[in-house]
Image (cartoon, rainbow, N blue to C red):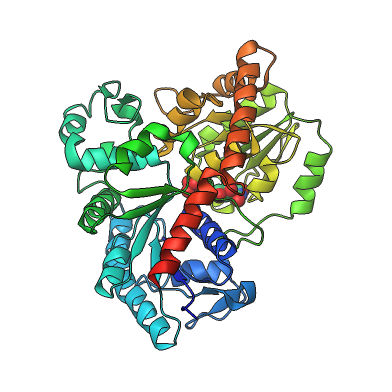
Length: 472
Ligand code: UDP
């Protein structure tokens, strides 16, 4: 009998990376009933995922032992801790890269010594060294790109040919850049790491250099790199063709939870907000969340909540515990004057979005949020901030026409009147709103089909799993 395929899934310790990585891990197990998966993120994130478990070499398992959780070290005690020190993130990344590569290599070797050899390393986007660890041991690897393939294509073009034109127009955000396979992109909507972080003094410069290293690493693979992408073919045909000429790109998404996903945030009591939703009419509720990293300052929050109140619609708004703590006047309760809405610190977003009462999602356009909204057929109000979010908003508004883009004022504040206008454009009675809702329903069908048995993403995942099995 041939050995069982064994995937080692390595991921950066942010929620927006852990969630799609864990979802993919479970899909791999479902696609290959004999497969094993070892899921590995940093020790700090691991402890947050499994708070009750011991942390010294902690090992947890699931799915009858086919899924094992084995953390790697990032060389720190506390992981990345937000700080006013502009160099703190870059310092963390230096430690993450050096210690992470060492520790992940030890895990691969220990698994082999245990008679559980790894047959494929799958890694998310900020750890290019995972490919080196695998290559050094003769193990094939695959990048799991957890942003749109359009963003992957932008980075690919930038680091091969377009850095000059972008650099020349950094002070002209409306200048339009043409890249093969992509709709023309204003410089101001390119991923922020290409416009804001190229200078070593920028606090996220290490993300820029890591992505540069990643693109170089992929070019080194012979004969071609495998790139799994959390998207589906139907969503991004042109971008796929552009990068498909260089790498074996397999869209396998949207990869959604199949139950029991551990995360690094503690959820509010779901009975409370689900009951609240149950009592609301279909398509009446505005759901608001800016993901796991963005922090909303007090002035922004007050404008947002005022706009939501003035919209006259019920709303469910996520304000994370760490965001509340970061508000200047943390003593004032953010939710004490709300009439039409409720505030939670963390909810089961996929469940909320699929509730019939939810009619629109005010989102920062993190890619997981966009995919979850698309899969639920919920129109979006886009409030992008950084990273890939501006490009994602372009896709939502221009390519798929399932949302509206909110404009911020010169100080970057989303004003109450704009919140109201956008919600109306997505939920109101005008023809434009009806069109957004119709497109959202259409894309929901397309995405559901791609993910279903025999759909384009399902077939791509099987191709990947079969490749891993044949190579064992
Ligand atoms: N999320 C959640 N509950 C919340 C807010 C967010 O489960 O109250 C999840 C959401 O479903 C998504 C992730 O957190 O899977 C956020 O990822 P995304 O890529 O949208 O943004 P990021 O946090 O990376 O900025």
